[in-house]
Image (cartoon, rainbow, N blue to C red; front, side):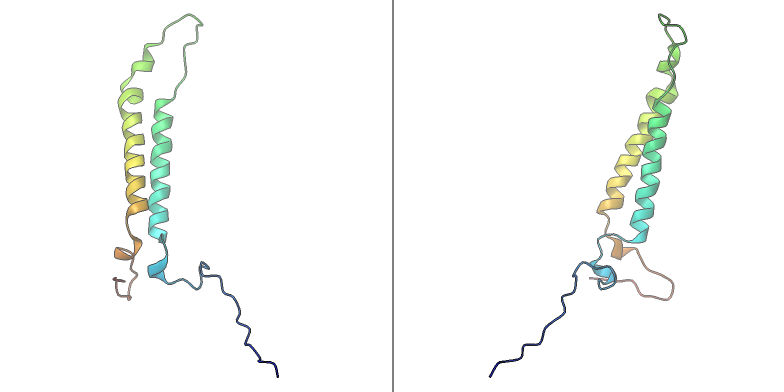
Length: 105
């Protein structure tokens, strides 16, 4: 006489539909913040870039402009700093929709 063992269907524990909002590592707000920070970093690098001199042996004093030395690195640094905040900040503390209560520990 054989025992009938009920075959359980294996569920993926990491599937998005089965995970509650509290257990997700990032919320849509985290992704929006990370995207904004990536744009800020890109703008910083864009400000630091620039053309050279039109003459091969000529010196272009534009490489020492305020835009390239101060503004570009400052935007990139702020982008990286805010990116760390967007990744580390827990989503469930400030991610709530209208009509729903805030999810707490």
